[in-house]
Length: 360
Image (cartoon, rainbow, N blue to C red; front, side, top):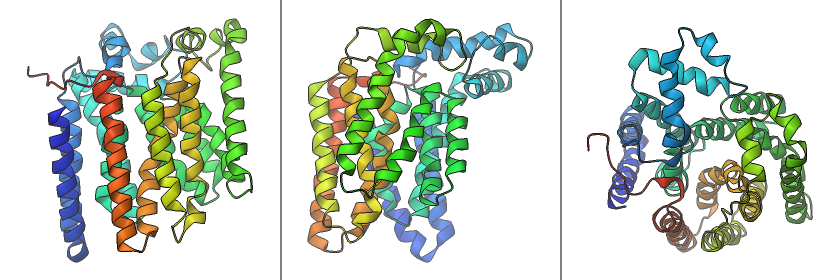
C-alpha cells in the first residue's frame, strides 16, 4: 500500500511543478509531464506477475502461447474476436520476448490519454492524474484487454461533444477489437441525447436497467452466442455464473462520490456542460449494483468510472469562489482516497496489493 501512496504523492507534486513551469516554458512543462508518464509506465511494467489477477488467469498464457505459431495470421486464427489485443501480444513476444514490455505499452497508452485530456481541457493537470491514480490506475494492472478498450472510448468522448457520432462509433468498434464488452459503450449515444431532458436521471436509470436486463437474458441465447464471434464463451460463463461480486461498502462510497460531484456541480457556473458526464456515474453505480445478480456487471461498470477523470476537474475549474473550490477539493480527494482504500486495500479488487517487482 505504502509504495502506491508514495508514487501518487511524487507524481502529484511533479504535476503541480509541471503546471507552474508550463505557464512560462511550455517545453519544460511537457518534459516534466513526460517524466511522470514514464514513472507510472515503468512502475506498471516492472510489477511482479502476481500483481493483477488476470495476468495469471489469461495474460501470461496468451503471451507465452505466441511461441507455438510461426505467423501472426495462424495465431489469430485460433481466436474468435479481440484480434488487436492478441496481435499486440504476438508482436511484442517476437520483438522482445518479455511480457513486461506489454505492461509498459498498455500503461503508457492509458496514462498518455489522461495527460492529453488534462492539457486539452486546460484544467489542473494534477487533479486529472490524481483522479486517474485513485480510481483507475490499480485496475489497469489487472484488466489488460479492457484497459485499452476503456481508454479508446474515453479518448473518443470528444467526438460526442463535437457531434461527430460516426467517429465515436468507429472508436467503439475499434475498442471491441481489444475487448468485446466495449459494445456497451454504444449506450452513451442515447444517454447523450437525454442529458438535457427534464427527467434525465430517471431515464438514465431506466436505460441502465434495460441494459442489465439484456445482459441477464443472454443465458437464454448462450448456445447461439458461443457459436458467433460477437461474444466468446467466457463471457457467457460470466453471465450465467452465480458468483456475487457486489460489495455494499464499495457501493456506498460510490454513492457518496457521486453526490459530492453532483452537489458541487450545482454551484458550477458551467453546470449545463457537465449534464452528460453526471449521468455516467449513475450508470456506473447501477451496473456495479447488478453484480449482485450478474457476475460481469462490475466489469461492465469500468467503462463508466473513468469519466470521473474528466468530470471531477471540470467541476473544479468551474467553481470560482476560492472557499468553495478548496472545500470541493478536500471533499472529493478524501472520498477518492477512501474509494481507493476500500476497493484496492481492504477488499483487494483486481489483486494489485501488495505490490512487488519482478526483481523480487
